[in-house]
Image 1 (spheres, rainbow, N blue to C red):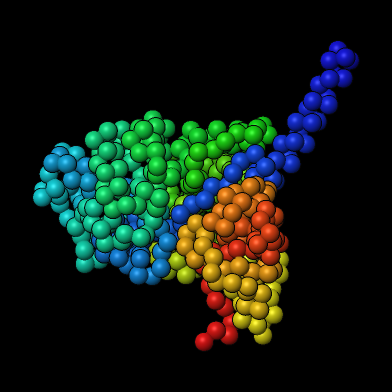
Image 2 (cartoon, helix red, strand yellow):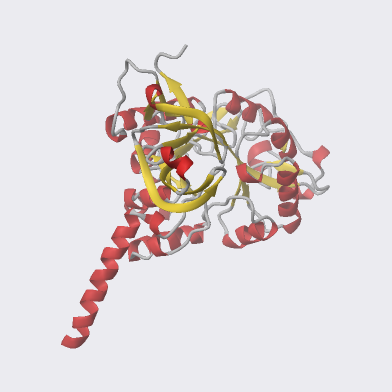
Length: 429
């Protein structure tokens, strides 16, 4: 027994230390995901607290007030049209006990004049538009807005039609597969593996198991988004049907098990975005950001501004590592407004990043570096390290660690930040 413990204890100790180190430094084993977009505000059903859910009026209003992603669900009519609707059965939304899949597009009834907001108990939405929207219209009218599409049924024809529309409007990198069920997600991934996708319910439970056993840092993750309900909204703004979820002790336990800052930070360091549903009150929005979420999903679009305000309050109070002198023109992160560089440290505007133009800076602040790796760039072979905003964890560009050609040596120790990730602050005309 003693000889067994002699080998076991060092092995367990080594595993624990390695796991903890890699949890905080995941890019040693895993290349950080490079998403085509980063969102701090998601409109649940198009902002169902202010306009009738999932209508074109709701989506238009959401985009006009500055949402960064539309969240929606999709079903197919009997004659093959893809309809944006949370439910297949239309009793709740229209008062007619009929399923979308059993009728043709022209036979769809109108939404109720006043519709209760699912995740905001006692609140109703109204609007002038009561028609069900076509998914193709959403893609056509909002070609650059990221869309999160939840597929609720294992219907190969529906999934193939969604994929075909995504390809038709050239939006594979900004349209997310979403589903609670793993078998449906597997079918979605089989039809189109180019689209980013979220954790299913089963995969979310596996994620927690990997985290608590220390295995998570060693395991590759294909998902780009973690989305689930903020526990504190349950039994307050959202009243569940399940008796188990109406138990305060159960909700408290779920909150303690799932809202882990260490887990969220690890996922963000790997380029995975975390969206917590459905945060319609300022206390919930602040709680989501405090927990480490990258963005809350709201039904009320006034919450869009509350979201930004809550994030700014939290980041100013707790997260920024450095503030640049207010007498200088400066560049800040467009996603979270963390200061990045003074204009005086700008060397050149003539560089090209993966998403367009990029600037070369002599020095930067509030920026972290990943591991260096050799890359063949337009100007030759370099050793570079990806850099990211330490506040919101968006990948911004890279740092030149070493240039292998004499003419490129001037770049060593300098930083590239892509223009798409910067905004000009303070003193610009």
